[in-house]
Length: 206
Image (cartoon, rainbow, N blue to C red; front, side, top):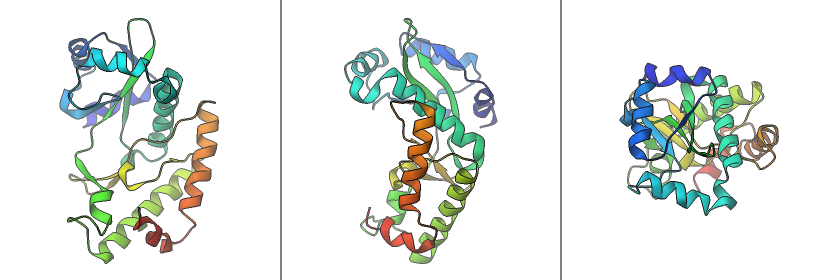
């Protein structure tokens, strides 16, 4: 995955108009389409339809909100690159409007399938405690670096099947930009992580 992570040193973007052009632009970056995920593309919908759909859902997917979420992911990745899905680049349409971003695809299991007792794949308690200790360590590093995630639910944490590390995805965004998003993220994180492993009992109910 080294070829995926190199573009993250720059705040780059690509311009596309359909799924074919997206794939061509990814090839120019040296990225195979199975190594990344196009955030804001849903299921098997064709790319052009998704662009149109995003434009009609501005309350949730405005260009500014997408761009701030991407910048949040970049900040998290700089602070803890081994535990955050690598952001690749913003994606713009031919009018220059942000319609999404490319992010490293994590081949892993969401913690919702490993931690919740209602799941058939729920891990034994001792393994769940160790995993939560790992999450505490990740969040401590992020907060020490002055950044936060802000949407710390199991669905936004994956355990990579290759290196077995927990990886974070999908941080919060904010209409007032990156600074406001970071401030809100740290506040939200601290509400969920009150400094001890005891909060695993809260996580189990999610």
